Each structure stands twice: as C-alpha cells, then as structure tokens.
Amino acid sequence: MTTGNMNELKAAIKWSEDGLVPAIVQDAQSKEVLMLAYMNEESLGLSVSTGSTWFWSRSRGELWNKGATSGHTQRIASMSYDCDGDTLLVRVEQQGPACHTGRYSCFYNDIELQGGAEQAAQTADEEIAKDRFAVLGKLEEIIAQRHAERPAGAYTTYLFDKGVDKILKKVGEESAEVIIAAKNQDNDELRSEASDLLFHLMVLLRDRGLPLDDIMGELASRHGKPTTNKMR
Image (cartoon, rainbow, N blue to C red; front, side):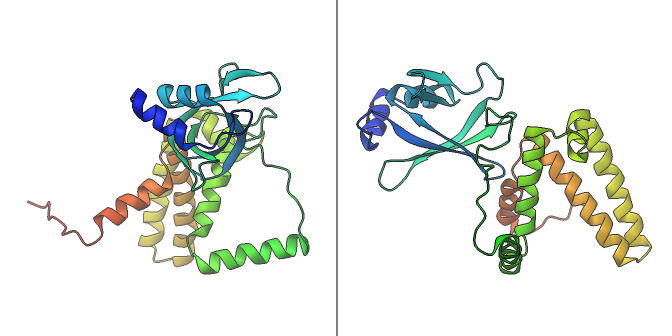
C-alpha cells in the first residue's frame, strides 16, 4: 500500500479519543471469532505493511506483535472496516491458540440463555434444517479448535501431532473403505465410511491451511462449464 493510500485508510477510520480502533480477529478458515484487540495508526500501518497482526496494548502502553513471543502468530488474509469506520475486521491464518490461556478463541465463556441446552439444541437443529451443510461448518470449527488447542487424548490431536503423512494415510484408507462399501452395495456401510472420509479430508484441509470455502468456490466456478473428455 502506498503512503497516499495508507493516509486515506487512516483518514477513513473513526479513531477514539485515545487514538484507537477495535479490531475483531477472525479465523479465515473456520470463521470463528478469535479475539478482540485495539489498533492505533502505527499498529494498523505495521499490520498492513508486514502482513501480520500488530496491536496497541492499553494496559502496557506499547505496541505488540501477536505471537512474537508465544509463536502463536497471525498471518493476515484480509482486512476491512465497517460501514461507520469505527471497527476493523481482520481475517487471519492462526498458528496455535489465539488466547493467552491456551484456548483456540478468547470467547470460550458461554452465557446460558433462557431455555438452556434444550434451546441451544433446538437452534442447532433449526440451522441444519435451513442449511443442510451447516454441520460441515460446525465440524470445521471443531477441527480448527482441536488444531489450535491440541487437547490430550483427542483423536484429532493425534492426527495433527503425527503430521500430514499420517493424515494422508487415513484419507487413503477411508477412500478404500468407501470403494469397498460401494462395491458391496451396502448403503449403511457407505454412509459411515463416506462420513469418515469427509472428516479426515477436512482434517487434511486444516493441516494444509485450505478453507472449506475455497473448495466450495472451486466447485461453484466449475458450475455450468463444459467438461472435457480426457480419454484418448
């Protein structure tokens, strides 16, 4: 970004009396909100120029580069500001937990609403009824959380700790199981094995830092295009 464009950006932001603007940080893959921090003009400029998040610490009164000491860095995928210019949205590729507590997201303290778990379950069912692919989005969030927090004893932790070769081995095994189930003409088995394959494929996507949205976008870009016959 040129100096002129940077000046235009800073002029478009409605800074507080303290010269700050809140920045909502969101996982670019899972779309989970990770944290809220504050930027001043200098940290905004550093974030734009370096491609990693810089903030202003109100408690310490100094600039800080997220992950500089912990290693839990945030590579910026995109930045935008809202219609009023008083809030930033920063989409990042998060390395490790975003929260200093070791949690994937700082927003882990749930507030129980009237109706409690029953209402939450009903809401989840309604979301799935409205969008039959909503469960994939929820699964992507859970896998992203496991990737960041690595809870002991979790199967997903095991896969991430073993690395891409182990994940690829599982994708290959589950692909073979899908083929066998289909050849056996057993739809119950096929449903189970296809679910396992999708799960492991989504683990692979998270490991490689490829959002599910990119897959959906690729499929959408192919819609209506003529196919080519590659057979000779």
